[in-house]
Amino acid sequence: MAVRLIKKFALNNSSIGRSYSSGIQKVTLIPGDGIGPEISAAVQKIFETAKVPIEWETVDVTPVKGPDGKFGIPQAAIDSVNRNKIGLKGPLMTPVGKGHRSLNLALRKEFNLYANVRPCRSLDGYKTLYDDVDVVTIRENTEGEYSGIEHEIVDGVVQSIKLITEEASSRVAEFAFQYAKQNGRKKVTVVHKANIMRMSDGLFLRCCREMAAKYPEVKFEERYLDTVCLNMVQDPKKYDVLVMPNLYGDILSDMCAGLVGGLGLTPSGNIGLNGALFELFTEQPQILLERI
Image 1 (cartoon, one colour):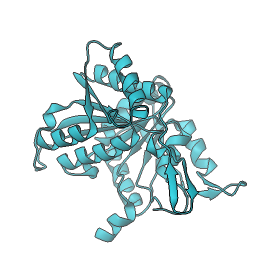
Image 2 (spheres, one colour; image 1 turned 135 degrees about the vertical axis):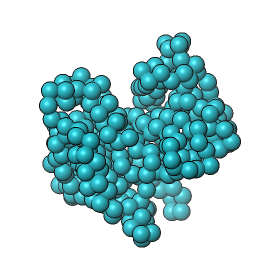
Image 3 (cartoon, helix red, strand yellow; image 1 turned 30 degrees about the vertical axis):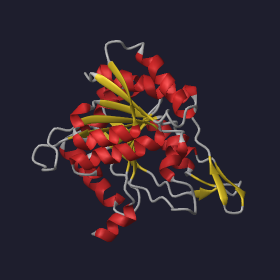
Image 4 (tube, one colour; image 1 turned 45 degrees about the vertical axis):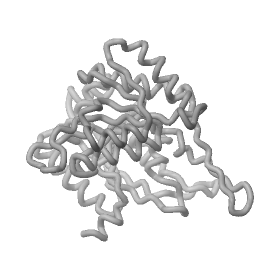
């Protein structure tokens, strides 16, 4: 599945497609932490066996301290992704409540990878509670509760700001409808809680409604997040393509992955205007090492 995702993006992107069709496409490889190097090596073997014309450029994204005292992605890694336009990333350790900020979030911000796309499909021969799952979650990837805007008002009281903008909401909504149209999908469902967060989710919902009017051939529906979670575990066939703000997408896409066997069976792509970064796995890598 990872092979198909990367190949499809390369062929559909005009600048990348030209280099891919004419010869070898260079792809940035971020092995990651914990089990990352091991599973990245396995993916390389699969690509080699499948005779995919890819040359890997391996980079390290261990945070480096800048002149301002803040930790960031090494410049060599930034240059590699900007140059190659396509990257494949293993799991990266995210500090819990301390240390540098999430590298996953930093990469999405650095390259403006605004849409996370995760297809969740039942696989033949892999037995789960469901055998007919075929949904795609599309998550706004750059703002929402994961904007990283937090501060302490007074001792013992902290505030986290949920940032929603018209530009980002319209952009991911348009991506969802274009994805549905190009992939023969019949319906887009916007997942929200505008009944409670009237301004933030209300803006996201309005942008989705406006975009839906431009794609009359694609059915459009609006559903509350809690309703979608309930219906998803009862009957996944109710849904086709789902688009939602950042936090909702993080949770719901993992839940959908659980329906078909887990995160290891649902690679995802972080798509931007000028490139894409695909993921092998997203669970904490050190936890996985401890389980082995």
